[in-house]
Length: 301
Image (cartoon, rainbow, N blue to C red; front, side, top):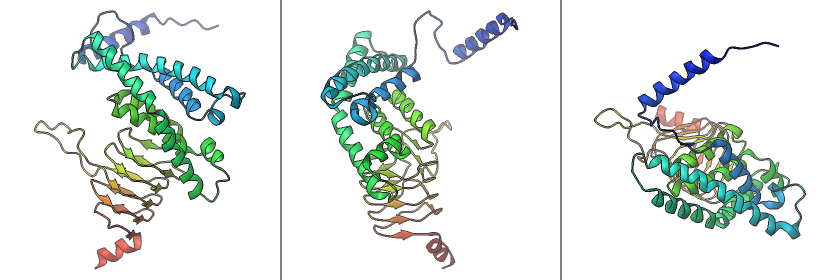
């Protein structure tokens, strides 16, 4: 059996950590974990999936007569774990905007209670997403198949939960939840994006939706669609300005086909159709159809 002398590596890693902490002006005082845990949040999201859809995403032996007991028990456990993660994010944020431990605790409790109260509305939104996928895909055999199998629906479960955390002032937790779905599905939705009811992502791989994108109701997008920023303004010191509206506005009943790229704060009008592999950087009127052929004709004219 091989024997490894790891002591020098341990010390070298210790020095590298110290260099990073010094550069980032981090404290050296002994304390517990400073940041939320990806593993803990993954557990919370899996529990919440069961809470939202107990007979389909809950335990395999669950029966209807014990559904409410399971939901209550699982929700209570998930909220306690989430509360601990919320405390960590708020404490982390308090290094820049100091707050007392009592204030952090009060804010954490308020946030988790508000998050819990929003779950019925989140379930209704997700029901509309599931129906949109079922009605929009001729290959779908049932709404249950859609919920269990479709990566776009999986990504939207994460997004609906992450968006609520984002709106409650918990951007780090929200981003972790969103990136878990990104890694699992290849669908990258920033938790800040506003998405209306009945949203359907078909196939999904390579879809990118930016932080300030606003999407209306009954919108359908296909794989490799990008709703991105055209440019990134900087301040007087050359630093990127964060939080400015820079992503598209997509009105109700728009369809965006595979590979389309829509950049900047442009508006896709209600009922517009964006063809595959087109590049859009200007507003599209309501009901209009944009294709490669129409763009080539416009350029030629």
